[in-house]
Image (cartoon, rainbow, N blue to C red; front, top):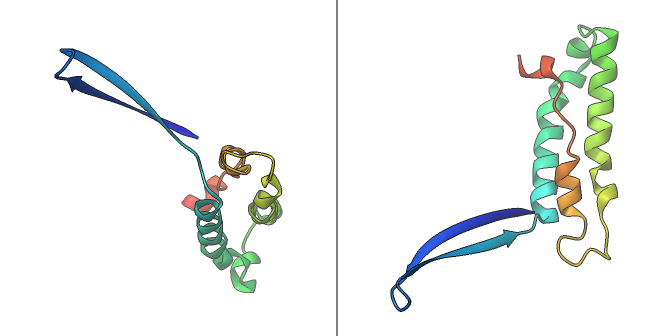
Length: 101
C-alpha cells in the first residue's frame, strides 16, 4: 500500500485542501517483478557461471530464487484490499549484493 498526498486550492472556500489517495499493490505487478528477477538471475545458474561462485554465493542464489518463488505464499483471499500483495511487496527478497557488481 502506498499513500499519495495531493494539495489543491479550493476556489469556493478559499482554502488549501489536502487529499490522500491510497493505492494497494496488486498481484499482477508482483508476478511481473518476480518473473523479471528470476530471469535476470538465471544467468548465474548456468554450469560455467555457477561453478565460479563460492559456496556461500551458491547458497545465496539458491535461497534468493526460492524466496522469489515463495512470494506467492503471501496470497490471502481474506484481505479485501490487496489479497496479500501489500505484504508480499513488503517481504520481497533482497538481491544478493555480489549479483549487482
